[in-house]
Image 1 (tube, rainbow, N blue to C red):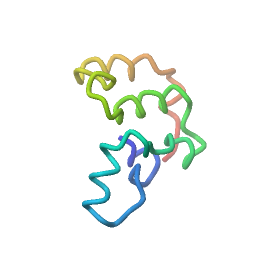
Image 2 (cartoon, one colour):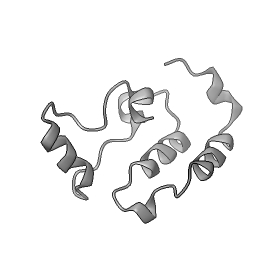
Image 3 (cartoon, rainbow, N blue to C red):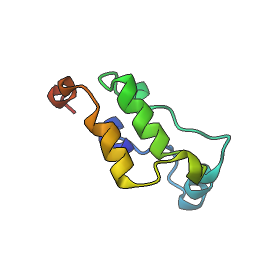
Amino acid sequence: MYELLAGQLPYKTQDKELYAKMIVSKKNRPQPPSYVNKQIPRNLDEITMRALECEPADRYQTMAEMILDLQRLPPVLKQLSF
């Protein structure tokens, strides 16, 4: 989802081992997608960043939960061009 919105992966490195370490690191959080693509609204940033949380309890527990949040987004988001 992050890559779809931002056009890049959340972490900038070509090293697969380092990338894996960055994913689990609580210190190394990615910038929200809107940092890269200014068209991304804050509420979509929040959904995306919640999906990337390090702690499993902080992430969406089910896909249905995430879909509910996505469905609550304003209809205007359908008009965004990526």
